[in-house]
Length: 198
Image (cartoon, rainbow, N blue to C red; front, side, top):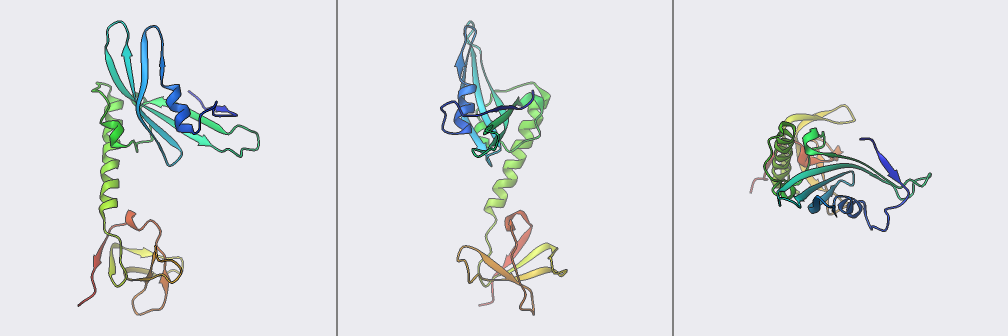
């Protein structure tokens, strides 16, 4: 299915609320309800959708995935668009939170099983990155591979120093140098920290 664009969220306060409402309904044959949902990075919606067959009571919980574009200042007025799919389509987006994955019922669909496995692998990587200690002032950071910087220099070891402009971030100083560097997304890199000698 392609993208669907609209000029309003039809009374809903956010894209997530709008999409929750789209997957929550009751018809003569089936009742559908969103058990849990998340909008990740404001661009991908994930939901555990429960569907119960009215005649038999058979229950299934599957994953809905929607690509999302939301721009309340769009020049043409089309502020919200989404493209929906479900897990058995083998979507490329696989950052579904485990709290949603844990609600899904078993399936035999191979693409869905592969997608669930990719999501769990990505969640494990995110947990490992989050658990990695943050560099503290006075430590030395040692990267598994040398990092190259815009000035053409590469370093594997850098000293962690205080940032005079921000108490929330640190800077890195090259050994035997006064050159200072910033390293965005530090936890996405492999490193170890060495405490200063006491």
